[in-house]
Length: 111
Length: 114
Image (cartoon, rainbow over all chains, first blue to last red; front, side, top):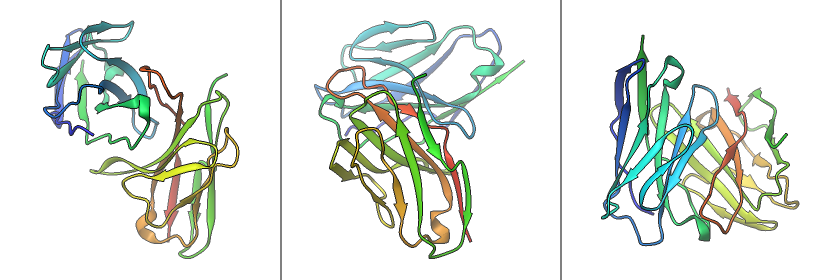
């Protein structure tokens, strides 16, 4: 399993775009990159997943450069309700195995 | 409604008194997993199961047991709980065999062992 490194915390303001970068230098060929969001005392919630280039859904975008050694979760026009912890995970999920969440990034949004 | 349920949601118990936390999912998922979450340590995987009768250890399996006799259920058993098992526990499930490996998490069980 590839180890991931994320900033411990980030601050931003309502209406801004927030980009959270995750480093995964040892990512393997078959690994996918997945991001989860967690609110206090709730289970994590899947946000987005990708393998390469760019993936976009109704919640966020995920940018993955060609070397795949990092990825960036982009949250457009954040609101107070986006205050949460965001986790980046890397792994070959088709074979199913241990899953390591890491420490995540605590995002705080201010009015 | 597709969901993962856990029971109980809150539990206070004493050291050494065996307990079981139940987990059930209604999505016909093959993969199920248990995590514990402690302040400053993030989410750590305890055990996981890829299908009925197939279980394996995660990162922190000591002091826990699991069983997977039915596809929908994956109970977590603490044979002799100790105070260091005081934590917030989450059960999760997902499909296997496709890239969209999206885990669905239960609401959590807050366990206190005194």
